[in-house]
Length: 300
Image 1 (cartoon, rainbow, N blue to C red):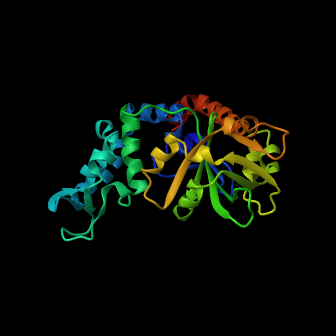
Image 2 (image 1 turned 90 degrees about the vertical axis):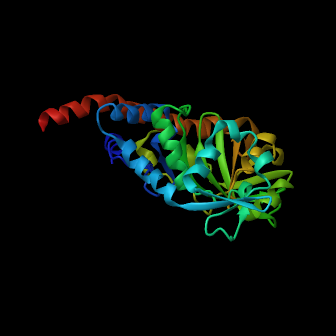
């Protein structure tokens, strides 16, 4: 699929494929330029907002119950997500809501802690974010390249203490790593993380076309990416972790806090270079979109 077809496909959950194996991909919400394109379509009568609104409207029929100080209040899923996304409540969410329980099933329970975030569905949350992006209520992002690259990490440089990780996003500032919720306590107490990977998979690509065959989920990786344990447990990452639903935790690691066992390239050159390749190609494709569509309409 070409980028122009992806943008006009009205698909909000789908990604634009970069590598054929699904390890590298892009979503329109992760770049200000593609967000602007989606907004332009709204002004031309292609109303994607209707699709999102219909999806979110259905949440108002999903009854939930809050319980605080043994008193129950009936509400719905739409109001819960709206409250969570309210910037006025975000700062005090954990302080004032830690004693509040929520049930998605019945007024008699079972109840879970509101701040446990176990009620949060990533797909549902995304639709709220997409609507705010398209209507101008969310800041637009610099380019981010999504990934699904499975890695194995050694805690405190010990092969006997391992945890699974994923590289889930690259930007020009750093990477986002995710870990399974079961490994969270192990990570909180670690001094360093050595992540086994195949550096060559990133080095051999110099143009966008070659990324189609990108493959970094290699089991024979012999290189290591080193990160201090404190990089995961800094205030920003711990605050973000508190909003996790407990199944998966995400951590932003700046390039300045990453080193490699091989010194041929810096983290910025290696990962940031990948971001540059994709951003330049998509920028080139975007420059053609305003030309291609009118021509297609005339031909029709």
